[in-house]
Structures are given as C-alpha cells and as structure tokens.
Length: 269
Length: 261
Ligand SMILES: Nc1ncnc2c1ncn2[C@@H]1O[C@H](COP(=O)(O)OP(=O)(O)OP(=O)(O)O)[C@@H](O)[C@H]1O
Ligand SMILES: [Mg+2]
Image (cartoon, rainbow over all chains, first blue to last red; front, side):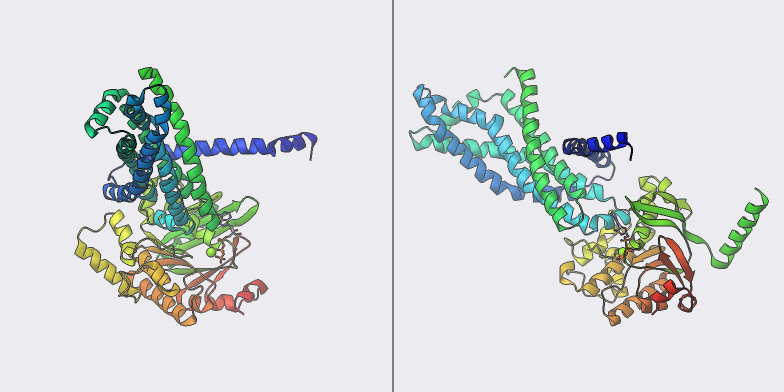
C-alpha cells in the first residue's frame, strides 16, 4: 500500500467523518423518500379507504393519551403560573396567558411529541417487521406498489391527524386550565372564555395549526422511512422503531424552531 | 451479420423449435455483495411449459438468482429477459405489469400476517383491480384454496396455521393471479416427507392445469424427481451442470454426485 493511500484510508475511517457521511446520505435518502411520497400519492387511484383506515388507527387510537396529557398540562400549568402572576397582581391575566401558551406552543408540541412516540414507533415497528419478513417484497413482486399502499397512506394519515389531535388537545388543555383557575377563586365559564378569546388572535391560531401539519408529515415520513429501510432481523425492527421516535421528536423541535422564526417574520410576534 | 452469427442464429431458432418459446432468459448474470461474489456469469433459459429446477448448496445464491429475475435485487451485470423484455430497462409500471405474470413463492412464505387468509388472497386482486364483483372474488378465492386442499381456512390468520399450511396458502396466493411463470423458492423445505410430496404433487397439478412454466429451487431430491424436467446445478456462481434427473444422477463428476447420495 502506498503512503498516500494509507493517509487517505486513515482519513476516511475517522469516526467523525463516517458519521457525517452517514448523516448526509440518510438526510438525502429521507428527502428522496419524501419526494417519492408526493409523486406516488398523486397517482390515481387515490388510496382513500386505506387512508381512512390509517386515520382511524393513528388518530382515534391516540386520542385518549393526547387528551389526558393535554388536560393535565392545562391544569398544572395554570396552577403553577398563578403564584407568579399573583406577585404582580395580575391574576386576572391567568386565563389569557395560559391559553395563549397552550395554543401557540404547548398543545401542538406536546401532541406532536406524543404522536412521535406512539405513532412513529408503531409505524416503524410495523413496516420494519413487514420488511424483514419479506412481506413488503411480496407486495412488490405481485406488482401491487407497496409504497403507495403502506407509505403514502400512513404519511397522509399522520399529516391529517396530528393537526386534528392538536386542535382537540388545545381545547382540552384550555378546559383543564379553566378547572385550574377555579381551584382557588371562582371564575364563571363565560367569563373565563371571554377572557381567553379576547386575547387569542388569529395570529396565534393559524401558525400554530399550520406547523402541526408539518409535525404530522415529519412523524409519518420518519416512521415509514425507518420501517421501510429496516435492517434484517428482529434487532433491526427494534432499531427502526427506536430511531423513528428519536429522529421524529428531534425533528419536531427543529420544525418548531423554524416555525417560530417564520411566524415572527410575518406577525412580528 | 457474419457467417458465425448466422450459424448461431440458426442454432438458436432450431433450439427454440425443439424446446418452445423462451419465457425467461438469463444471460451471463453477475451479482456480488461487497466481496461476496454470489453469481459469476449464470446462464439459464426457461422455455414455455417447462419446469426447471435449480439445485445448489445453501448460500450458493439461489434465492438471489430468482430475486434478480423479478427485480427485487439488481444484478451487477448480465441480462435478464422476461417475456422478451429486459427487466432492467423497464419503468415501474411496465415492471409491475410483468410481475403480475410471474408468481413468486418466498422461502419464508411472506404471508401478510395482519390479514386473514382470505385477505391475503384478495390483496393482489383488489389492488390490481382485476376483479369487480364480490361473487367473482369469492369464487376465485374458493378455487385457489381448493387447489391447495385447504378450503376451510379462509377466515384464519396466518399465525393460526401450521408451517405446511402456510406454505400451501403461499402457493395459493401465488396462483391467484394465474401467473404464466412461477418461481418457487424451496417449496418443500422444512416439511415432513408426506406433506412435501403433497406439495410436489400440487405443483405438478398446477403445471398441468394452467400450463405454467416454473423455476423451482430445492434440494429435495424426491420433489425434483417428480416435478422437474430439467435440473440446473448452481455452483460457484455458475450453472455448473445441467440435465435431466437421471443424467445428473449418473454423472461422473464428483461434485454433482454428492447431491444425489
Ligand atoms: N441482501 C443481501 N445482502 C448481502 N448479502 C446477501 C443478501 N442476500 C443474500 N446475500 C448473500 O448471498 C449469498 C447467497 O444467498 P442466498 O439467499 O441466495 O442463498 P441460497 O442459495 O438461497 O441458500 P439457501 O438454500 O440457504 O436458501 C449468501 O452468502 C448471502 O450471505
Ligand atoms: Mg434461499
């Protein structure tokens, strides 16, 4: 082996370089996977009934978990915020402040994180085990386009369901907050909601709902990508499910960061 | 066209006359995984109405070979033509079209385990929108299940079936699209001799009933004896030897003999 070659090999086996290369290739692969989603998704016939089936599985079945979490978050957040506001004598601001926080940030992000955990892992594991048991190959060789049947429907379902779950989470969270306000002191339902809606603007609601579509898309995309490219073996399935959750959760935060910048640009927060 | 090619051509066409129309042609197929050179120039022509067996040691690349035929794996070089069309040159739609004409029985069966047996069989029909009415679908499923001798299993889940039953449902699912070519990957491995014989008989019945051609991967000699008209021995990545069961059995080559001991 010549000297130059030796050096070159040394360089290419640097762990950092390898990791960077892997990261970049994977990012490119995921992007292509996303592009393929749009290409296949627009092909007729649309997979309406399977998409609805997935919406039911993904949305309806996550509702209890999302609902309970949102309720508790609203309640706890209100109770925790009260002392600080009390200090400034601004207790009457409690409903408005809490509801704006819930709608802008807590509702969407908590929902997305729960979905990343629950839906991302289940999609990753389901498609992963179909991959390693050659079920996806079996669909492929019967000419039935498994990408459209398995991937397009799931990504479409998460993209549609995460926003809906998030809106419900907002509503439930605000209701939790109402109960939280009422633990000490009495505020009527009407008064509470008039205070909430006085402060809640379209500029809070629209960006918040918009970003949940992206959250949903990211969760579906990562779950499907990881499952579809699962390594052989049971361990591979576990790894797919696991990394689907990790990457999807991380992506939710990154998208959230981008969303807040864009919102700032448009509405000047 | 020079003289040599002309002769080659005549030889080819004579060959076709004697053996029929080629449905699958594999020419000089090469496939490696990293440093693992699995196929090193494999050649095989499958003619219409013919059952060819591919015999070889475990890990010799038999599954890789048939996965290349349906485009699940891409070869490094060499050509595969199915029904006269080069597999690599096809776009997705054309490839899917060809794939519906080629049935594929996986070594692991690959039944869809979240669906019932009925849904497993229905899946390709429904997805390819071949069948319209429910009655027609029911008839086809019943026929397919009766063909494999399991008429009462339609509502069971794959996990509720025994290994041999799963294999047979796998065959039923492969047959439901009425493919012209069937690729069987070890249809009888892991079964008791009686069930293995039943499956072999089933393959023969299918062959006669629907006039299919097939490539059968197996190291089960009793199965090959019943089913295959021609046996190809895959060794060191090439078609090492070729012939009928008796020809290979009486071969002088040590390596060939080993398989028949
Ligand atoms: N996807 C893959 N990636 C890397 N190597 C592979 C892959 N598929 C097969 N191989 C390798 O190719 C070789 C042939 O595998 P193949 O599955 O074709 O064997 P086989 O002849 O079908 O054996 P068996 O009779 O045990 O089923 C093996 O050495 C295997 O390690
Ligand atoms: Mg094999």
